[in-house]
Image (cartoon, rainbow, N blue to C red):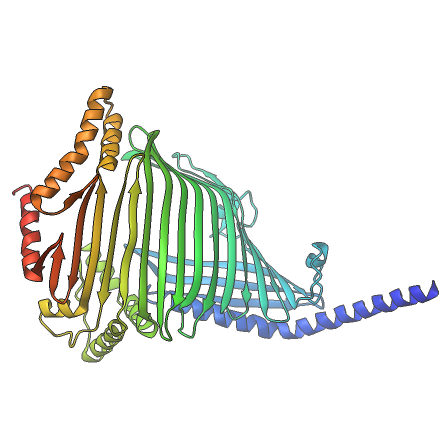
Length: 502
């Protein structure tokens, strides 16, 4: 018995010594760790805000250290950040961080998490004049809080909590958010991260004097991803997935409802060569209904391959630097702004663009489809690019060298067109079932007949099909070969015939 007591006593003393020593070590290391984390965060903020005309930074205001814990105070400052359309953001908010020293922080021990860690950080947004309204909407609780564990091996695990928010304004505008939980894990340098978050409900009602109210309801949000840094700065590979169980929009004078069940977005980015990246994003819309009537399902997948990563990064920075000029042109209704560049900047821009095109990137709409009860229509498109001999070539020669191949096919389902015609008739209040059925059956046939007569498509069974293949300066349009110039004249003639003056 005495031997057992002695062993337990020795074990207790050993644990106490390890805990005390670990707390002392953490206290000594803490300022260096915090300064390193702030430097990395500010560097990422600087890169993210290039082209906004402003800046954002985090600074440590104070650090009060004790033996087993410390308290840090931070300020997050944003100055003159241009959000576009003349909207500029400025704010200055505080964050309090209660830091528990390792190796066995009490909050982890209580949760039966007994793996030793360097420290546990408990961060909350501070209440001040700027955040007071947000606190009030969250029931006077911190709207944003996070607990982060820093392991001795450099692993980081964070639990981020967005508090439930409810806001009802006198003019009828309202917001009801159930809150969100987000878990993020990775390394302290931010080179690898995995995350998963979920929110139950988000409801927002917008009321304006000049239009009917609009209500947006989102149910069952899930977001997840896994990202890895590459040797190319700011370019990550991995996946990001988002899903919404239900999306409901109520709008218009009759307060009609658009309901989408099962909305998904799945994005993947990969390295497909030493210096090239590729990506694919897929969207899915499950059952779509409008005003209580079934509409159909939709899907879209877009991919891009063989993109030179260094060139892409350089061109992205150039675009961000000239973002105000692009926004000004858009506000003035100009499709392409006149960018003023000196000879040196023009040479750099053309050099990066040439490097991007020399990798022969390819862009594809792999599947744009819409399915109703009786039919499905599809569209796909692929375009291959290459570097031209010179960017100073005449426009027609430049385009032929830039775009080396184009393939596309459109397949319109006549039964699907009939389903949409039925839906339109029902939404317009028509009640004669026989007339609706006749009108719907004729709708697809009329489209097929017009396509045949115009030469824009062929009819294959129940589908109206149009195909195009361009390569080596020649176009194959629905089985007919012609030059690019002949194809352009053909399209111009069809467009003129379709215009109101035609």
